[in-house]
Image (cartoon, rainbow, N blue to C red; front, side, top):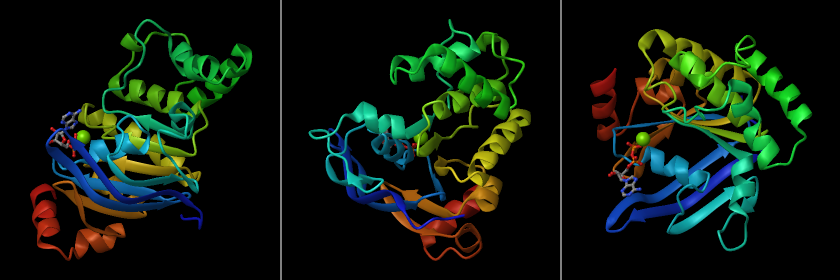
Length: 246
Ligand code: ADP
Ligand code: MG
């Protein structure tokens, strides 16, 4: 599924940590309702790229254009941008001393100033949607990893983002819990959410991805539609990577 509107456009993005040049001239376009999957070996810069897209890391150079607007730290309130670009992490980062529904309403009430009663109503709908309609009032410690990750997804959705970024959302899960989280993500994709997903789940990439980008050493080596890239990689690097994981 793919609209014509460019939700994210990245041009010649560069990011270094001290002397370490981590992102090198990254170009990336994500259209509305696209699901873009980023793959690549550990250390290739995938997390740093996602973190630059919601300004948890600040680029050194290049352009990041979100929904038509070029975002710069000097001219934009980054908290506002982060409301538009939600993120889900490998380690769920839930507040352990808050219940599930309290986790979900925290940002809408504290950051957006939504009335608590309204936030609870919407939060419950989101929890119902991710299959946690019976878990509003429990604490995260009582949940499985898959359930925690679905809470984290609901919590990100509670800000009504235009884009969702997922950084290896199933990598910390026991294998039997991976499917329920991927199913939730697929549902979101089917509803037209624009998504950028870092994952090693190639089945998901094939089934749900519109595009797959392969990163190596801070560069995008190759991208294509999933079947094209997986079945007919053009670059030697991509071939080597795919044969190492498939
Ligand atoms: P990936 O997600 O593909 O595994 P990362 O984006 O996490 O890759 O890391 C890319 C490179 O940047 C690695 O060499 C990593 O050690 C380095 N790096 C990531 N974050 C930081 C940081 N905050 N400070 C210094 N180096 C970092
Ligand atoms: Mg990473």
